Image (cartoon, rainbow, N blue to C red; front, side, top):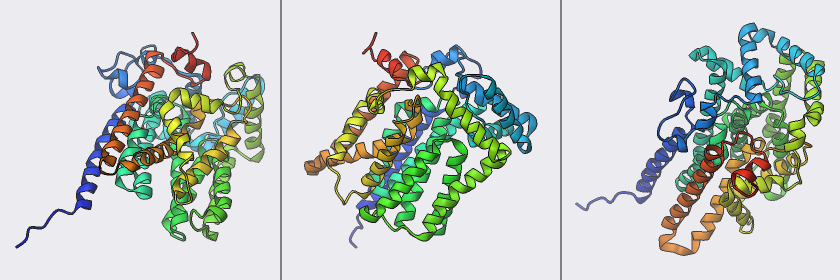
Length: 428
């Protein structure tokens, strides 16, 4: 009897799963909250140079935004969910009395997640919020692996997950009680589910998941407006670019998702007037906040400069991918439309530019960078897979090095341009 040879595709799939598991474990370790290693502000374990920033936690540093989120969680614990309008009313009274802007309690989902974590694990509010940020950064990493596997297969899943696992801004957001990494998860989930709905029209599970993801976006942060606008542009552009099929059901879900979020926020705020007033105060008084005026402005290409400072190889490769895009690379075009639309709007927000606000770009940019790497090694034929892996590993090493320089050696907290220039010794 002839021996049966192992199926090559099955072997490749198993190898990819093993590699993916290793990458996920490494990325998860780097995102673990500092409290797991030290319940008090103290030096961390021997791998701290590649994990949390020991200096911030040794000093017990708490950023102003983190303080506000902690206060909102404590207020929610004190008065319970049914009295949430009281928190919004208190915010409006405080905001009316001061000249600068403070974060509104309308970033409800992040605050509620911190409250839920605190209730389940009986931790202090700030610790709970940092654990939530860490947990959802890990979820984003897992989501990236699923997204890439569904779109391009196992090899891309391993490679894209690796690039995201060591992304400096992803690691930084996982260590602080800030909403931006939490928002990234919902933005990437929405983008992926939109793609799935375009590829598999009228599949109810994709539609329901998509509508719920958009609702969660609205409940998380006002930046959901930019993502929603990008979704509309993608759906309109589909007429010419042909990403997939836009069905009436998809259009209904695109409308009902944000609408449900707005209705929930209105209820939590205690009415339409309270909702409008809270957002009005936050937007208008942000223009008079000295820190925002000093660090949140710049030319339209500021995000390009900041991204280059943090992740130079990723940005260069992503730009190179633009010159190799054709009509067969629908996923790249899909992500490019999303990036271009959100960039065009977010680079025009007065005193509102900060690299952590665009944390949601990390996955699309690395997908484009991976596309450039694939094009670069395509002519190598026999050694293509080896070269592909070596380049991805090199980019990951550079990314991890950037994280150490910026967030460990120089203890950056905010991602403003001046701090990045100083940390990289461009400006003394």
